[in-house]
Image (cartoon, rainbow, N blue to C red; front, side, top):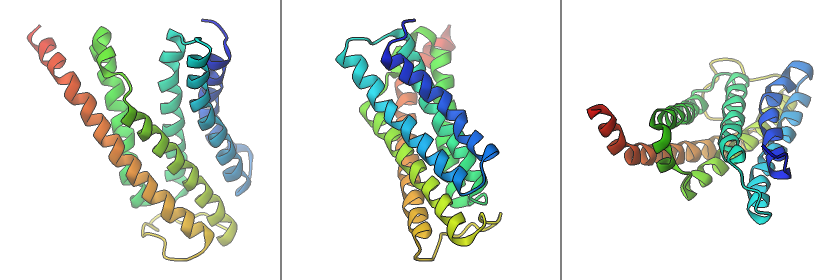
Length: 209
């Protein structure tokens, strides 16, 4: 492995993933929300630049190609875990979050099972849009949790599962964030099905073997 700038950015994004959760251990809210939001956005920006710079400078590597999707998944999974906990286990968030987490685990397992044939499941343009939708939705939801705590002085209690009905900035952010996470969940499900459809002939071949 060469420590090129694109590879370094990818590694930093991977390290930033658990840092989102760590913010809530060492800082009081809503500062933890703002710092988690800042860290998440900064890491998400590197997701564009590491690939762009690697192609521009012809520094693409197997290490970067392997680590890049891992870093993306780590960011999304950890951020969703934090958000579901601090949203009062809101079912409107848990349902799309479940779809996203299930798909990520399923596709990762599918790639591992296929082994050398996993190149068939290369990242598509729709999958890239899926990742973008996930990251934008998560950023907006972090904004909503921070504003909600700032405006109401507390985190939502468990069981407060209805869609927000107020007109404050926190409620607007929650509305937009929930809508975006549902869009991301739909894209996630569609890309997951597409990967499964492409892998199905190889799975049948493996069964015969």
